[in-house]
Amino acid sequence: MTSEFNARSFDRPRERVAPDSLSGHWSDGVDVDVAFSETTLIVAIKSDCDGCREFINSDLDQFRVPLLIISADDDGSSEWIDAVQPVFVSPEAFRLLDVRSPPFYVLIDPVARRVLTEGVLFGPSQVAAEIATYLDA
Image (cartoon, rainbow, N blue to C red; front, side, top):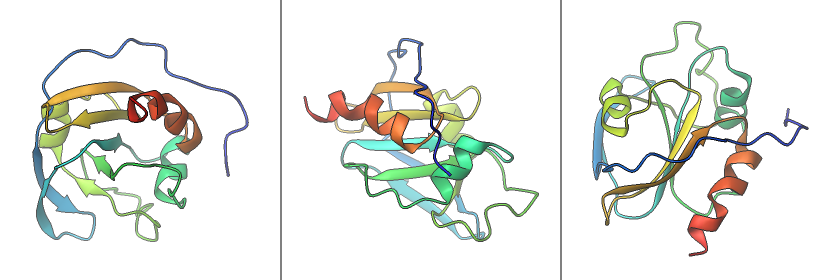
């Protein structure tokens, strides 16, 4: 289900350093360190969130950058078991990216070690539109 309204983030991105790697585990329990070498979209999700479900249950080919979906904790409702997209569980990622509350996205440039933009997440098409100008620069 895709959102029909034209939602967008309103807050101006906060300037800050972006990490070049994150530690955590996939929702199936496998521990992993994820290293970033190019501009990457990181989407912070939570359980019982319509916009979040659109991210984990959709084909996300519309994004022209690598994408990492993160959560601060495992999904107790098992909502993510059959998800199309894997979920990376990492409370550390929320701290390092200064994500205060999901649903939220952060576009990072790990080479320059900075956050390019960020915003509230409503759905894939909204996020793709908001990050497009940073990818065309």
